[in-house]
Length: 399
Image 1: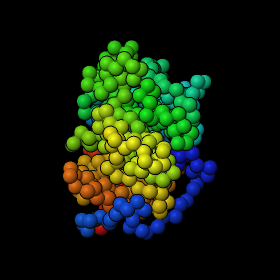
Image 2: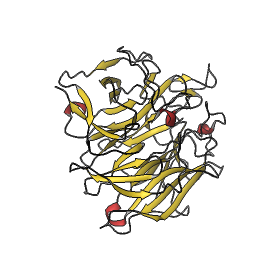
Image 3: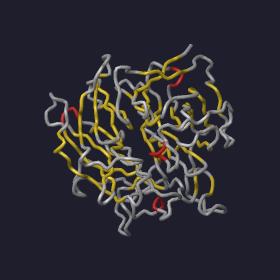
Image 4: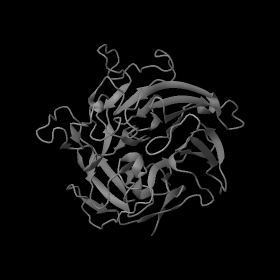
């Protein structure tokens, strides 16, 4: 994602060029290998040269058979186009700029379509607003399926939660294979999680939330019966599915294994990838990835879940952008691997995991541009967004 969205760094994120080394060690002792198959090398190319977007931060499909791709623009708009054509223009789907507080790490950050969108017209967004500063999870509707355009007056707010600072807003919304809506939230910002929000089960910050959008026992949503903290009466928020996260910038489900993956942006030293488990505590701010953070030494690690992979801030890699497990058909050498990248360096990797085996991480692209998000189409083919260039990129095999 854009560097300023993921980290409070006093440099211009939009034009920062960070030199990438050719080291095969990521600085943490985790060995980065070339594509082990030897069968293919990869490059990124522009997928739709006729299209440009303003500060794109998310790309999703509606799973409605329309072959459309929807691009979220940070200022508060969503646009779509037919990915099966050679589009030269996109159509405005939703404009809520009048509701959204955008800039820095704030804005319209997430989009998810209801599993029954084709019949009910519902979709969900995550955005920030001001006065008071807070995050909003809201539902909108397409009233006329024939028009394919959303009604900006149809907003139903499901959930709001205060943001003490302007950074670390998380922002992903995804429907899981169970039909529930998953929401990623940041720790509320500043640096080092000064209020220890991510460990506070009475707050929604630094968490993965899980909501039943088809129920109304909480007014505009419900709590799934098997949420790990459902029924708690001590102030614990029942929406919480997992906690101890700093700024999970992009989550996704593997359609084959049903596992939930998250890229969690680190503080000053380490970026991490997590497979999210129900009720799991991923350690922040006690730990940054697998190292003690607060306190720096002899932290209490019992019950904390370490990442499946992490990397240090070497070679210009300082801001993870979470991706997807590839399940398409055009890149057979990547099937089953988690594809993710780093906004600052532009490098992209393929992570291979197996139960009981050490993870294997392969560098597949040495350089891309301002990588704000990955996305997939209805065929599970993979795309990535160039934030500063406003372009949609895709992968191609070089040889």
